[in-house]
Length: 258
Image (cartoon, rainbow, N blue to C red; front, side, top):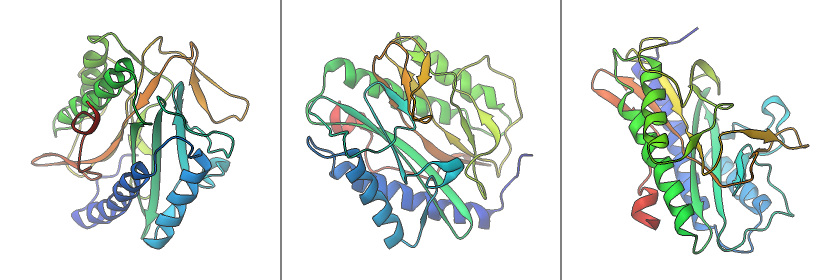
């Protein structure tokens, strides 16, 4: 069931999203060679608690951490580890969510560790740009797959591939709600978008083939060909005046690193 949120509910979601966006920006400040992904997890959880928020991922279907930290070929759900120490040239996707006052916020971004290759810069740039292409289609009267098609069309025209196994989703009083928001597909299909819908749009884009496999930890998804992957996500609300990003960031990847 798709729930249309009231203005008051969207404001509660926005409050959670603001905490998520702030914590992600704080995490970016800690990204440097030598830091472990478990260090980043501890920072994210500590910051959430200070904000009076509960990490949304910890305990979700048994996931034991507050943060998903996916490095290089890891697509999504990378499990923090004291053994995974960042190195110069890596890219890391940080996916984080919180719940406050009964409402969830969720966002992700990919950042470099020191100086990264031109190929990695281009991948991250295209992934972030396709997110905004998708968001631009989150307009009342459009259909869900208009978002999906815009993302796929932008990505594939630039020689990259779209992960199929993981998709965006509705969000509100649960972390994952209807509808699902794939990052691929033909336009003009799926439910019609209406004001009050709140969506987490999150393309995951690969340098190589789109196929992924899940590692033995039953969480970490990696590219089958072990080539780089990037992930960006915003939570947005569909309004009478177009899409409203509820997890705004001060700067885009291209402004900071492009």
